[in-house]
Image (cartoon, rainbow over all chains, first blue to last red; front, side):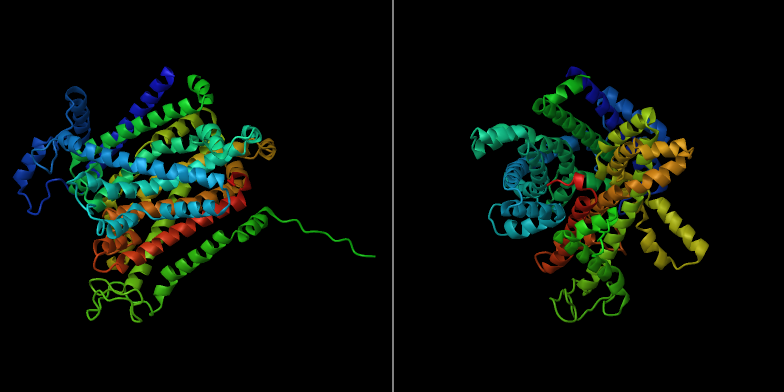
Length: 309
Length: 314
C-alpha cells in the first residue's frame, strides 16, 4: 500500500515536471509578448522591461532560474501584465472560487448521475432505461457552451436570486455548477449503468434473488460496491474534465476562477501566470488521480495484492 | 428430384453491414450525417445559398423568412449560409485532426505492440504520462505557439505557387488546429491498437508468416494492420465527436478558428452573446452542432456493436 503510494507520487512528480517543461518552452514560442499594449512601447523601455523580468536571457537559463526560484523560495514570479501582482496572489485568490465551483458541480453530477445509472441498469432495455440513456447522450452532445447560455436564458433571467454573470454572492455559483454538473452526470450515468449491468448478471446476484432479497437490498447491499468501480475510476479524469469545462463555464458566466485567468493569460501572453496555472493544474490532476486510485483499492480488494506486487 | 440447396455464407464485412442495417438509430444517424455533409460541402456550391459574408442591410437581425430561412444576424448576414459554411469548417477540422491522430496512434500502437518487451513498456509508460497531462491546456498553448510558423508556411506557399493569398490563407489558418488537436489526440487509439496487435501477434498465421521468412514490415502492414481495420474504424468514428468538441470549445473561448473562418463554435459564441435579442442565432448553430455530435455517437456505437459484437455492452 505504502509502496503503491510512493510509486504513484513519483509518477505524478514526473507528470508535473514534463507538463511544466513542455509548457515553458511552448509559451516562449508564442508570437507576441506580454508588453504589447494599446500603445507601442519605445525600444529602450521594452529592453528595460525584458531585463527586469529576466526575459532577455536565453530560454534555457530562464528555465533553470524558474525552477530555482520555485524550489528555493517558493516564488512563482510576478504577473507580467497585471502590474504589482504576484502569480501566487492571483492563484490563491482564484483557486477557492474554482474549487467551490468544482465541488458543487461534482456533487450535482454524483447526485444525478449515479442514481440515474442504477435505475437504468435495473430497468435494462425498458422505457426508463431508453429515456435516461437518451437524455445522457443528449447532454454529452450539448457542450457546456450550449447548456450554459441556455440555462442562463431560461433560469437565470426569470428565477430571482440567480445570476447569469459575476461572482458577488454565493448563489452565483449555482448556474455554472449546474452546467458543469449536468455534463458529468451524463458520463457518470453511462458508466454506472455499465458497471451495474455487469454485476447484476453475476451468479451471486442470482443467489441473492433466489434467497428473496428485495430490489433495494440487491441494488444497494450486493451490487453497488463493485458496480460503482467504473464510475469511481472516471472521477479522476472527471476532475480534469471539470477543470477544462471550467474554461468554458467560467468564460461564459464571468466567474473569476483559474479557468478564466488561464484563458486571459494565454491571450495576454502573461508567461509566469500561464506557467503557474499549468503547474497548479498538474498538481491537482495528479492528486485527484492518486485519491481515485486509493479509493479503487479500498472498493476492490483484488487490487490490493496487485498493488503490492 | 429436388436440387440440394446451398446457403451462401456471409463474409465478415457483409455480416457486420447486416447487423448495422438492423440498428435503426445508427442508420438514421448515417443518413443524417450524409445529409449534413451534402448540405455543408455541396449545397453551398450552388447559388441558392447566399454568400455567408455578404450583408443584406435591409434585413438586419431579421426573423425567419423565405428569403432568409434562418433569419439574419446583426450585420444582415444570412444565418443559414453561415451555419452551413461553419459546418464545413467544423467537419473539416474534425476529420483532418482525426486523421492526424489516427496515423500517429496507429503507427505508435503497431510498433509498440509488435516489438513488445522493454520498448513496449517504455512506449506505454510514455503514453501514461501524456495521458495525465491536461489535454486542453496543452492544445491551447500548442496551437498558439505554432501559429507563427504556419503563417510563414502560408507566405512561402503563396510565393512558391503564385496562388492568391485570400484563397490559401483560410485553409492554412486551420493548420495549427489540425496539428495541435491531432498531435495530442492519438493516445486512446494507440492503446487500443497496441492491445489488438498483441492479440493478433499471438495467432498461428503470424507464426506461419514468420516461419516463411517474411520481413517485419511485411508482417506488420500486410498481416496485422488489415485485421485492425474494424477496431480502428469504430474508434475513429467515436473519436470524431470528441475532437469536434475540442475544436468548438477552443473556438468558443476565442482561441480556435479565427476570422475570416467561422465554425459552429464561433457561431455559438456569437449567438450566446446576442441571445436575449435574437435567440435563433444561438439555437440554429447549436442544434446543427449537437445533432451532428449525437449522430456521430450513435453511428459509432452502432458500428462497434456491428463490427465487434464482443465489445458491445448489452
